[in-house]
View 1 (spheres, rainbow, N blue to C red):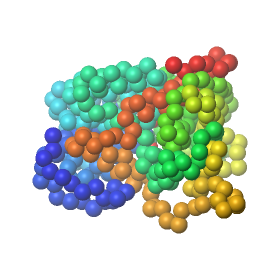
View 2 (tube, rainbow, N blue to C red):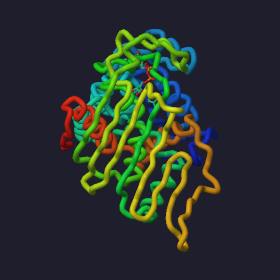
View 3 (tube, helix red, strand yellow):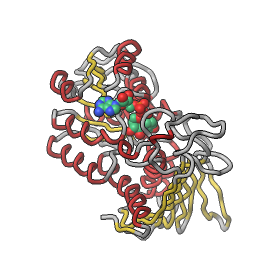
Length: 369
Ligand SMILES: NC(=O)c1ccc[n+]([C@@H]2O[C@H](COP(=O)([O-])OP(=O)(O)OC[C@H]3O[C@@H](n4cnc5c(N)ncnc54)[C@H](O)[C@@H]3O)[C@@H](O)[C@H]2O)c1
């Protein structure tokens, strides 16, 4: 597709360079909050041209036009795909539309990056992977935390044998009170679940990546709802969520068994009575262990228990993470570089999440196929 090269700045820095070759013509399906973060990241990449935005809400289309000078505005993605014929599409709708919008885009010949979670169920993920294979197009999942310098360091430490055999990982994505008060994050029908699928997914994806992506084989777990389905009663960062339509869990706890014998424990909550918010994973191996926040490696060295912390890691805020994940996608589309988070990574994480939800509904451990 492209006939020129563009340097990739470390951490997706904002330096904009001239690009003389063919551009990647992109469109957005879903033009809400996260699409703006993506658009700002893509606007630093001279080889990307954003031609169209699709949203069922006309106000969001107006924002695309006035704030980002995007002129192809559509309420229906089938019409956009037919008229614009984009090279690549970013799917930023609520989770329930990820699969249909992705499949339609792939069938129209576009490469796709879909926001996390990949979809609502593993079955939908599989259909997306099949569609990408059939169309011969790239399919990426918006897992930005695997581009974080701490994740990269810990992944490399595992590859270099610092942890030995990984036995156990604890994933925590806990908000003291952080129920989204926008979008449809409280509606199971449109999202597939609550904090487990919405924020647990982030910590699971990076922990699973650092573990070396083992195959999950069984899940146990339980979910509870006790705050979100009632009106907001305390001062919190996002008050007045739509409690009347709230049908997802407030807290999910799960345990996953992997084919290699490792165990992953997961805690995810929008409303946990804990001292403070937690966003972290802890890994324990036979030779060493680590935490993601702060990034640290715990080993035995010179007859001593040693805690190692990086002397330097690049600063990496949310915007930088998005530049990195979109850089990887754009490089995949234009230059056929390998995707860091392909559909296969998305379905593995989806099976973990789905396993916990199924185990909770069945009140017993369930198999993951
Ligand atoms: N990677 C991250 O860190 C991150 C952060 C936030 C959200 N997300 C993900 O991004 C997605 C969107 O989240 P958001 O916060 O932007 O939500 P949002 O509610 O702000 O935006 C979603 C938009 O999609 C539109 N939409 C709904 N159905 C549509 C359809 N069929 N066709 C076209 N447009 C449609 C809505 O009108 C809305 O404007 C979710 O899947 C969420 O999990 C990812």
